[in-house]
Length: 138
Image 1 (spheres, helix red, strand yellow):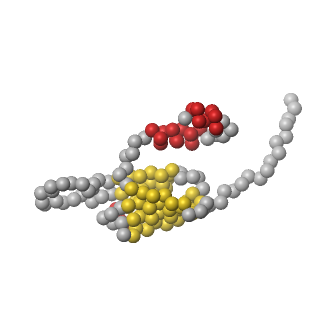
Image 2: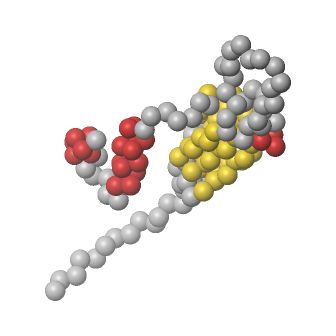
Image 3: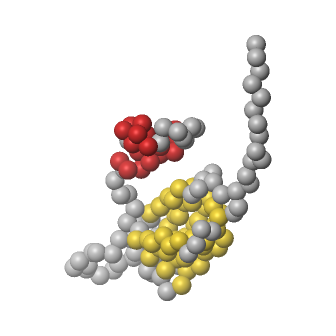
């Protein structure tokens, strides 16, 4: 990441945490078994589609903390009274975290036919007015 920062991003000041996070995320192994798509409709509208077959709405918790969207899925324990020949369906709770740009907000979420759709939108950034800096001679 250092080469990338030096060659292309040397004019970005104050983005150290952002570059560190990219470095950290690129080295993390996949910990969630959730399948999801992220869809961009235009510059202001996004959706995250998460496959959650067999999950009820009361098992899902969606929260935003700082600039993170946290999806927490709590699975109910299976009460199996029969011999299971093959166990392929996971039944453990899982968490998926998405990093959001500062001006992206969650609009709504709905669960239909095993697909959770989280709608996001980008609010307009407030631009700073142009400012001329006066040079003070000492």
